[in-house]
Image (cartoon, rainbow, N blue to C red; front, side):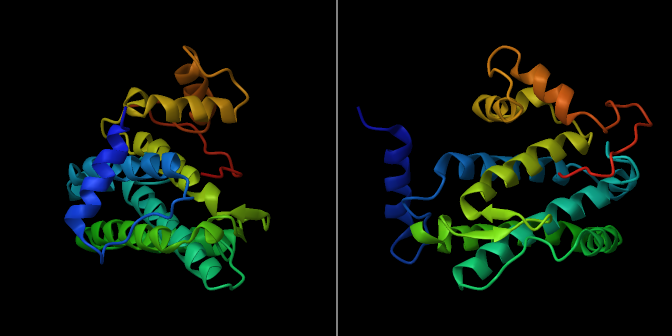
Length: 228
């Protein structure tokens, strides 16, 4: 039996023509789907927030929703720049430093509404272009993360998916854990060395909810080593 997704991809390629970009055969297809679905989900929530709503607190202590949108956007730009540098054979780090990363987010939170929304949109387009320009060999190459540890490019789509889906919850704008792809929730649970199954959502909520305030409740301090 033909794979419906493979059939759909072949039809899409036929419609788009020879000049369109596609993921390399060896790209982490499953994780890319999770990241792109997370992008669409986060974008839908963002589109539903007006200027006053963006000013309200996120679930991350000390951050407004504007801070959160800036953070998610600059994270996409960081992954895109990492991919571009690695593809060019240049040394690459995801962020120059924790201080620079925090300062960038603080500046981004002051952007006018339209500029902040454009930042999110453009950073996502940039990241997808870079991902689609990676060869099979590029996907096996590495840059470094914020701690200076090797960061394989093949890991970045999963990390980006985690960033998008968890911070969609942090927007506190109607996102639900049950909206995440079930296989992605299972992957998060497996990351915690927890058996993926009926208890996966509970395990993910308990672990990744630490340091965030509960929905609709003020308070809760964000750990200083918060990595996401």
